[in-house]
Amino acid sequence: MKSLAILDIDDTLFDWLSMWTTSFIGFRSALASACEQQLIEIDLRLRRAHKSVGTSEYPFKGMELNDLFPEIEVSKLSEISDQLQAARADGHKLYGGVSDSLLELRSTGFRIALHTDAPPLLAGYRVKKLGIAKFADGLYSTRSRVAKSLNEVPRGCECPHIVVQAKKPDPTALNQILTDFEVEAPDAVYVGDSLMRDVAMASDCNVVSVHASYGDNRDTQGYELLRAVSHWTDEDIEFERRLKDRGTVLPSAVVTSPGEIAKAVFHAKAGKSFT
Image (cartoon, rainbow, N blue to C red):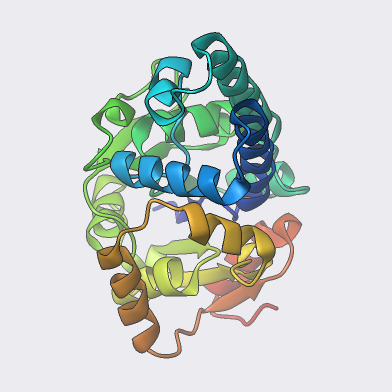
């Protein structure tokens, strides 16, 4: 039976945080300039909007922004929205060496599943823009409980797109992936940037884990900005606290460069250390 590599996408295969930070800074600056408001006021409005739609990556349209910024003309809001989407598109670039790693995994007989907490519409766009569907045997996205419009599965994906109900670190989705691929836990390897979500989930499923430490960037200014305007509710923050209370989570292996994902997977699968 072929082994299975299950790969997180955001901050594991591409720099999601940099994409979000760069596009958001330009977005808020354009809004502040157009309505002559301080950035703190812009951030407060956008945080309320993000919480109402359940994501900090919502693809706002001009008319949707009009409810938030009635002092700005709709035509100007549409222009700002277009600039936001263009900046996000520009930020969808694979880390260096990822394509080679995916190709190496495929050439050595591994099947590949992509797994993300992003809702179907954003996940489908992500995979298409990054050009990684051709390497994958399946894409697993997560249904949004708030923004129903983001639950549409885009057409034209080069691999099967399956929508799961539970977010990481709930093991439900990972167990479904194992079942769908008819793979036992010892024949799978999970690669992700989050110790508390990706690695902890894999451990709970007895799946070998690889921590993509290069993408674990929660002590940065970009992450602080995300935290300040994010969609996270008080319940989400409390959930994060409980995750930290879990204590130390140890991966089977650590990879410090995206170009070495395949090597890390091979070593972890063989029970060998890799750092």
